Length: 501
Image (cartoon, rainbow, N blue to C red; front, side, top):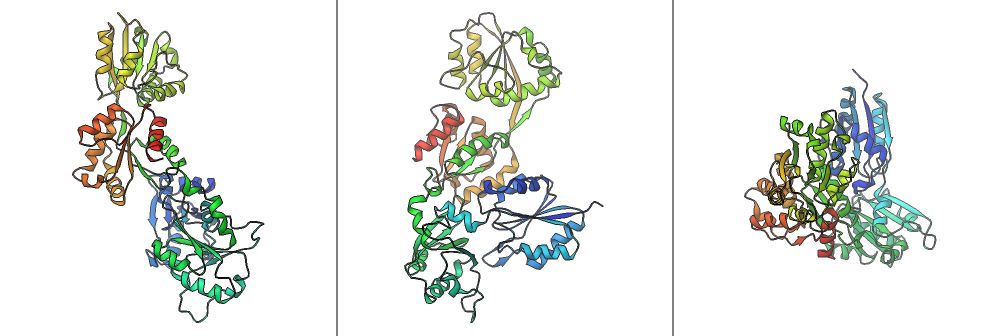
């Protein structure tokens, strides 16, 4: 049996993009992933599908698994010869009990490594516009656990010493905020000392309440702020008004559901996330390449066609995969002119070294592509359209009316991923602000997955990439609130931004 190993990995403060490169690489290789409540579940997407994922988090003092059992679990899985990633929120050695787990592993002779993570003690204030040190305010910083019972006769925290320091950051201290504020004032800290309490820092749920040691308890109650949150105490809190940036992004806090394929969703998600949105990828379509012999036959006689037309990025990708499977390359397109339905398809072709001869200027639809052919003589020309199995026939019909001989070649079909239903329903129940649709297929399969639970769509805004997709939405009884003027991902992002900002 191969030797097992445990990696104690910091998952960072909440924003999944704040994980380290080393941590990501280890998750991608993990055979067993043991993760906590504060480790963003999006990080699990990096793990192999076959990886065993075990949740051992605790919330509000309720333990899924006691620490002693977690220690035994890590030892057990390592002894089975597994590569174990113990994913802990923040940094494993900062109030994360990573030191205790490392001790047990060392005692049992289990090989281990520690991968530090970005701690919430520094990252969360930064996302709230608060530098924990600043030469005009303080050069001292203390990070303290606030997880102590209020009724203890003697606290292990030296409040007298803390009262003389500049910035104090309490982790896990929400329950004891009244005790912390009271003790600091009793030990000489001015009751006018600024305080910030930041909940779910670095995430789209981030909320910050600012006050001072005298009124912060009341302000937190008024705001109904609960754990998880950190407490920042010190003059540096005054800088928040000037330096706050994260919560000022135009789409901050908006929860947006993306229905594109898993492979394509990342581009839209990335652009919206940069504007402050929290994006959830729930693919309602999957691309399934067709394998019928007709595709190979048509590819082998490409020289007989005058035009090859692509109506989607997916069509480009699948077509060239089949071209290469036939031991051919782009030289097979010698003498064939190429048309693309829009800028995305045009860019996809450039990845294969192909520059499209015809692309619509404005409307990236079949109608728009037909208009782009208005200045092209198609009489007697042979045209091959590589597209999805299910599609509108506006383009082939219009080309035939212009005198062309048209061959429609379905190279892929879109199928509905049934495994998306549970995640979709769960997210809608939690609350979503916007759902994006980038094709009629995403709309049709969305409602197929949704079933009879349309009441979950109350208050949700629908964002469509263009008029054809919008029309499909209307057929299901829903009017799109947002429609891209330019029918591209960038156009859709711009339309969403314009709607909210």
